[in-house]
Image (cartoon, rainbow over all chains, first blue to last red; front, side):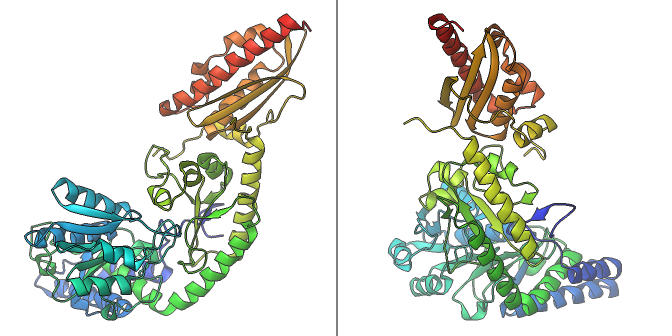
Length: 387
Length: 126
């Protein structure tokens, strides 16, 4: 059982629990290294050393120079800094920007804000499985394109974009390439130094670190305008006193991930196969996202003629996400699934199972039982539609 | 978002929809609107609703409201269907105000059922 009380938590794409090793490291830093790292005294130097250790741990996971990392409050801030900072910095060269319809709100809303300021944004459509064909990306480039932002792993479908190929095209055309890696960092192995990526956003709480801290990788030689002012910290790109304990937690989570990623992936792959095998015979079951080559921690499924909100209640005590906008009062269908070509009703009935390190085979058995039972109950309850 | 959008009454009706199904040979009313579908069926004897059943495609509040209606009106005289009030059900189930339109679909279905029963009684008294 991975959760509090009788909850069965299968929403690891939303957030993850603190790894015990991370929690221990944070407690130690809170007790012994709580000083302001900007202070020029022995206490400040203790905290500075903690920050350096964390930077080294994260840099090691990503295979980058620690000096390329900017600490932020999370991926949302990192996305804002990367996109807004680049757009402002290169505005004099051109105002065309590229992104996808299936990006996270933390990216979508920044581009919407830039549109309101006169930038011209091309919103690329994915294939039905969530992938962006490289030729579609290449065809959207223009002389005045300045920035492309494409997420690494989609948070709703688990689709993995070919950031190596997209980045290579960006390099050929002198376009800055930002990747929202909130669902990939600490969960999939990759080597940023050898990827043609200029900016990469991540957050700790998606890989068993604390909430409230993230980072932006800024490749050497990538100019960026700051969004905030008020101090000289972090090369003036992100001023403000560093949250030493949170950053230490992020670093420790990266260190844990570095040794457990392969094991985690094997574990998640087996669980996803078990889950899919248990529900695939449900009539009309549809996989929202890639069937085979996606991130194995996410399985998004929908069934015909089921009301999503009722299904979510029928699944309790499972903690899963729906295909409706769970962060709002509305029951609007997911714009990500709509972009994949799903109807409003299909999107509204979607359930995202996201699995994690603590998930057990027994959790999956229970999830299968509850999902099958819930679908059957609601189908039995539904009257025929009148044509 | 409300942390607990369903009160105990909603959870009870949703978890145990005792009146789910179809009244065999019964009088039927169906309404579809607001993305919801509600089907009520009833058997009547001596102007008393002896059996009331429902089928719903909708959110938990609509399912719970329809089950509540069936629990309240099964066994009562047909004439009392006029007493059905959505305000009371909205209050008892703490239905969010933005779902008012959905609950009104139930009201329309109940009206339609009452009219269908009256038509049947006029044409074929029980």
